[in-house]
Length: 391
Image (tube, rainbow, N blue to C red):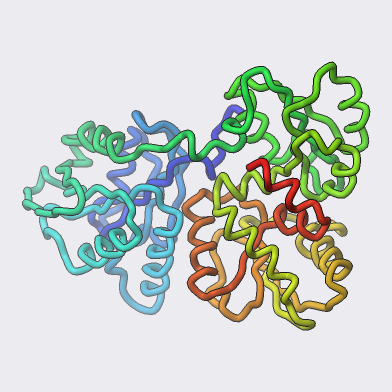
């Protein structure tokens, strides 16, 4: 737990033409040779993600992208992947070659960044070879040389000014508890649980409780009743893995607030109100409706996998209808989401908030309801109101 997960790091993406010095800028920013630098145009092909620490921001992910002017059929695919990086970008850097100046490719990415309302900095690189004045009323402009390190500290300071996070808005659970509160975390150990550790959302919730001076108590669903009986005072909340909702809701007294890790993450990274509306749409789905089950990462599926086995089973039991399912996993998002009647998404522990909101907004733009695992499971187990009312 001492390493900040990628999903919790500030995502800084670097855009620019081929050979504008994007990779060398990453090396200068970090003080390390972590990006491949070459005079050959188009050295960087697919987006490259580097987890680093940059003061004054702290833990970040630097994303090196392919050149915006890449050519040919392969080049078009690379540019497309570069543009998709905007969907997970917290802060953008547009690198301009000081020798050639700003071009139509740079203007295009600037417009795209403005349309997404992202904070950004224009960096005029290679000023050791010449200096082209760039005027822009939308973003600050910094002049640097990745070769001599001129202006690099100015760039770091500008990055720190641009990036600010509303800590109160983006707490997982800390704003729902008081210092000294007991919070019980129910963490099933089943075939899907990783050996020797608990899953990432459980780690992050526990850390957030500790950060806000709460007292976290971890137990399994089978020991929950004993745990509650052994506590001298009533816990302020019980948080469970969604898959154990049915058992946990029966054991947890009604006067103790109950929710799940996934529902907390629906609020933390997404739009809980939209996801609640998505859950309610299962009442209107017709027999044979087409459902996309999307996950933010790939993993080895067990025989009782939640996305491919448990959720289809629970939906069949609740609705009495047969639905058609497609499954998608990974950091991208299908372009054909408009074909579906409902999107059911995982808790998105491996995605940052920008990417989650992009997926939610994409669904909304196409009028496709979307819900995440925890919100849906609470609904079909008929404990929806109880589990969402506390947040």
